[in-house]
Image (cartoon, rainbow, N blue to C red; front, side, top):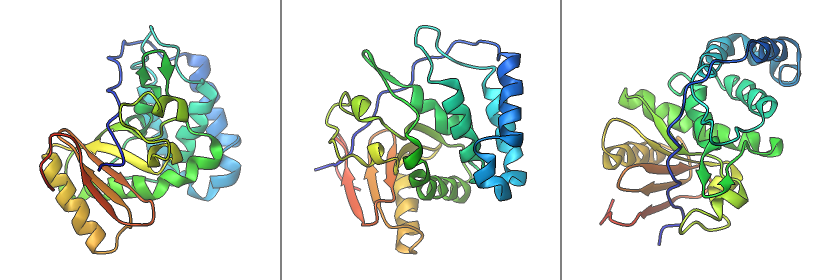
Length: 219
């Protein structure tokens, strides 16, 4: 029995120019504020990732859906930048946080859960690096309310703890899952690997688990 399930795809975005005031505010936040006081030793290597995030603000927010709180997303982006990931852009991580099921909108995780995602992000970064492929994510953190709208999701989903990512690369999900298992066999991480028809679930729950989603015969 799988203990995780796919989240819905993010809505097709519309283009909207980034507000200059927000651009300046984010630079100020990164230079002197909130996240910096706690992660200042890691900031020099984070600037390129913050630039990617700033560039993404000129792209896509669906005008039919109220976006997540800007200040909250900006602070989380700065935190994510301090992880210095080489192959996973910040916008790719953040995009699933604005997914919507019906009338329920996903959200940025509460700050006490932020650090939980770091081991899983580093695993995703390692996967993308070893396979030399571009990465996409369709589910990362899920708020409890949003998770409850996902068919088959359990309340204790690792997504609600900010420890799980549903991802895809250019290779088949089966090939991605195989590389993930190889990394786990080499003690790179301890956690779950779920194989689905269009993506692979990974998490760092602290114990190994394997399963296949509906329509997948075996791993």
